[in-house]
Structure formats: structure tokens, C-alpha cells
Length: 83
Image (cartoon, rainbow, N blue to C red; front, side, top):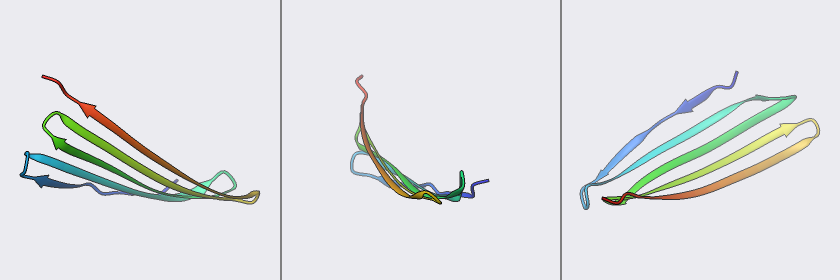
């Protein structure tokens, strides 16, 4: 079993009635014959009405008897809504 903690914080912005949502995640536990630690952050930004940008970052540390591994993932996804 991998313990996990999730937290979400919403910050309104009155300039364009925009918003921001931040969701950090921390996980750790066993992974095959070793251990794994993960820290991830998801950020959603409404830049203006009809334009949202999603940003994601994930960091992993895996320790196995065969060796250690570190990974990072960065992702940016724009979303456009036309009306």
C-alpha cells in the first residue's frame, strides 16, 4: 500500500473573473524490491475567458537493489474554448 496525501487550493482572480487551481500530491511506499517517492503538482490557470492552461510537474525517486533512478516529467496543455 502506498500512503498518499492530496490537497487542492483554489485562488480566484477578479481581473477577468479568472481562477487558479493548485493540486500538489506526495506519495511514497514500496516499489517492486525497493522504494519509491513521488512529488507532483498540477496547476490550472484560466488566463482569460475561453483560455485555460494546464501545467503539470512530476518528480520520482526510485531506489532498488540494482540502483537508483530519478525522473522528471513536465507538461503544458493549452485549452481554447470558442463560442
